[in-house]
Image 1 (cartoon, one colour):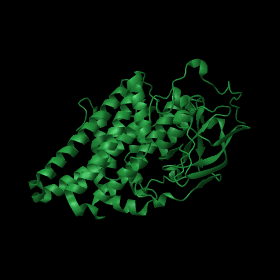
Image 2 (tube, rainbow, N blue to C red):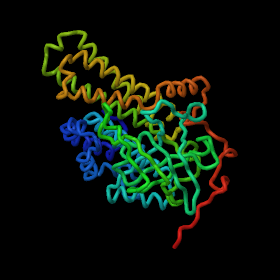
Image 3 (cartoon, helix red, strand yellow):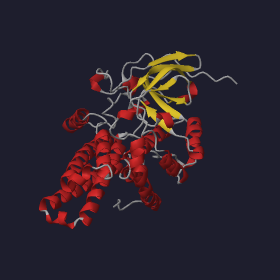
Image 4 (cartoon, rainbow, N blue to C red):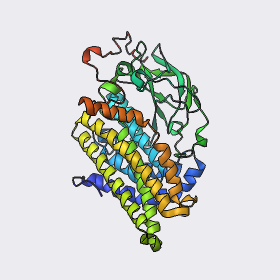
Length: 419
């Protein structure tokens, strides 16, 4: 089931995740119905050390230099998502955010934030998207790539931020928020994309209603938030403007792939269990063909994300980013195929709420909407045609050093904090 060169460390964690999976599966229906946050599942994740996989060892965790974006982080997300799509989604966002701090923060920030996660089980969330589902107009950046319109004003000792973020997965359950903006004096994410850390609770943060009406991934607190004059001190700014696009080598898409793959695996397991107990279904060649199709698609998708992960592990960043987009597209195709075939094979049993297929199907459909396929495929096609690959091609272009802008270039510099 796993790559031939998997380490004993990773293999042990995957077995530990598989042992915890039945508990998550038994709670999944209740988690889905209640929405909110999977508190009981995260209690288990904390107590059993899974949050520490996103933290390097030098800061109290169990991870390496790739912590947050490592094979083992992505693999346990796949396992947990196969039982509960909401928990898998919530955990992947934790790992993403830990990985951002690990890759962009200075030593003091890593010790403070990652150390808090490792020692106290603090949670962290990334709040970037400004797409608002209840509004008909969005404001993409240049070339349709990701951009930000939130206010970001220099003040004494740091910045004040204001704006509305459309999706804040896990934010309301977290202590730390990674807030994405454009640096003052910039209008191009390649130059100015910036991440600052907001510590909660904060009176300037208002959590917006709406996610309770979502049909899937319901227990992830993925609704919006309004930010009004929230102060971010210099000590909480991660790196220089543009660092995420230009020097941070990892992308979120690989874990979106493993999350969707996990949901597909969960649906497939429900189909196999039903086929095994209702042997008459096996006498239908159409059903047996469909099972073969599902198995093939799942194994092909898993192989693609393993290949992308291998490229990351080899630090072949540009090919890794490109291959990740291929894997994510295939994961979306696989989730759609497996979901549809499951209903055809199982029949009316699949439409009842006591069957996990109905819930996992909704989770898969919601998760597959993250990043429009036309953007993914356009980015893939441009790389294939030009032969010029860039790990962050989905987000923008690679800048020559002469076009980079530092805080000093923008007329800003960190001020020492008062004694």
